[in-house]
Amino acid sequence: MSATVFPQYAKTTSPEVAKTHSLNQDALDAFRKKAKELTDKYGGTGYLSGCTFDATQYLSGIISETEPASGRWKRFGSRENYWRPWRNNPAAMVMRCVRYEPERLPGAISSAWQFDRATGGSHVFNYISFALDGVIYTGCSAAGDEHDENNLCDWESTWTEITAGEFKRALATYNERQQES
Image (cartoon, rainbow, N blue to C red; front, side, top):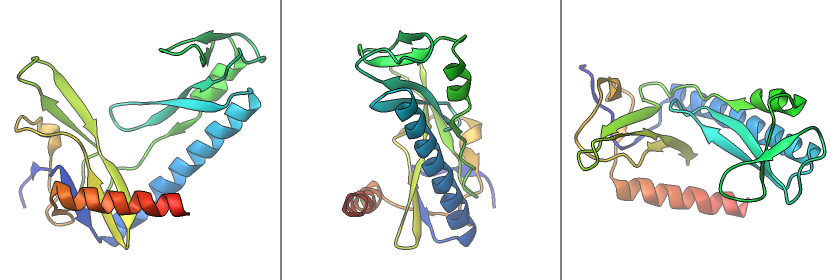
C-alpha cells in the first residue's frame, strides 16, 4: 500500500487501535484527576489546559476568584479569574509535570497541517477519537486540498473513511451516553 492523505473522518474495529485508545483514555482521565486535585489544593474552582501541536495537553493555570494563597501568582488570559504561578513558585514546577501525552493511534496521524490560501498562513488540526459500541472513531475539523507530507500514511489497512454525517451522529450518541453516566 502506498501512503495517502489520512481522511478527515474515519473509523475502525482494530483491536490494536482499541487498546491504544483505551490506554490514551486512561491517561487522559489520570491527567484530569491530577489537574482537579491541584486545583482543589490551590483553592481553585477549575483548571485551564493548553495543547501542543502533537496533541499533548498540559496544565496551564487555575480558575479562582481570588489569588491562590500558595506563593506568587499572576493573572493571565482574557479573564480576571485565570491564574498562573510565577516561575519561582513551587506550584509552577508541580503544574509543569501534569501532562497528557497520547500515543498515536496505529495507522492514523495525530495532527494535520493545512495551508490557507486566503491568508497565506497555515493551520494545525488535532484529531479527536472516541469509542462507541466497539468502534473507534476519529476526526478533525481540517478541510481542503493542501496537505503536508507528514499527513501521509498507510491508513487504508486499518481505517475506513466515513462521512462527516456518520461521524457527527456517532459523536452525538457518544456525548449523550456520557451525560447519562
